[in-house]
Image (cartoon, rainbow, N blue to C red):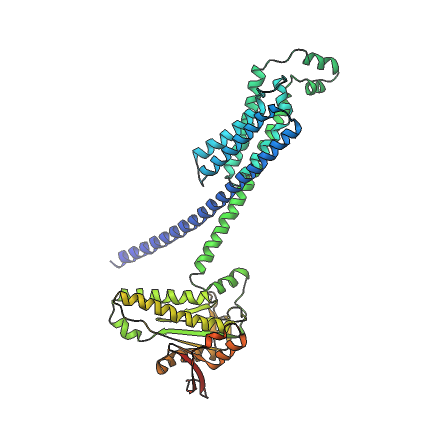
Length: 463
């Protein structure tokens, strides 16, 4: 029985580990897919804008080259490409999309037909082979370049292969069905009888197949190169999405201030140093009695909502959540990097916590739930900061300043106050000159005994 139970327990642990790994992989995949989707959406928007800029520029350029009414044929093709680009942007998504691929294929087909098929409105008759002599193939690079902003590496390579296939396929059809204009080839042979290469180049009826194949091969090579470049970029994007996910997970356990320092430096918290900081403690008054009358699950829900509300105020006022303390928490202001209004931020946070509790209690009263009271204590002074962990990070703020802040929070019961701060903190708030009105409405209590201090201290309290 013992061996069976042990084997069962081991299997359960392994199954739990596999489940955890699968969940982590699933979460990472979701982040990566979201990052790729956002990248593609932005890329498609940029590609459409680039097309809507490039096509009018090309249209104006064509009119500059040949200011004739027959050029409206090519303007219509450019307009059709702009419209198809808009359809592509609407159909685009991460993963395979047959509609998107069909629109891309139509895009290339429109361009190929526009370049190879003679203009039906042209006033002069040109040999079909001359359509390949106008260097129009270079415009395909505009489509390819725009494709790298939005498409996957496979689609980029497919654009290269499809373009080459259409270009050479049209060449084969033109060579097979087109009729050469009489007299032109004879004139070329009479002019260049000594060099067959010059003859082929200057013969208007010659398609110069070698150059057409060269265009197609170079285009495919460029598309493959760009495709693998896109693949490399997408890999970097996935890794960046993984880092974003890790940072998001880290921010669930550390304050944004600490996460920022961790992300920017290799060992930002290793150096132990002394700094002047503001330390805030908040604790629910009478929690033991309150929780004794509640269901355990309701107690957890209460703490979750209380911590959530208080945590938001800490982060909103540029504080660092040091730790949760059961039914309370400890926050510091001026860590890991000191600021010019740390004391003011701490006192503003305390007032915001009190307001948040009042709003919450109004909601609880409508639900017939008891009022939640909390005491807040703040002190300002020198504390020791740094990482006291070995392998697991434990960013600590320790010293008498922390102890005094905790004692001031306990003093709220005696003074029947919600916020109690040291006179040292009040003087620092005045010195910072950020929000001196934060001290309005305070009651001064001199000669207060604080455990751990040899001399009584003066405190300020708000009810």
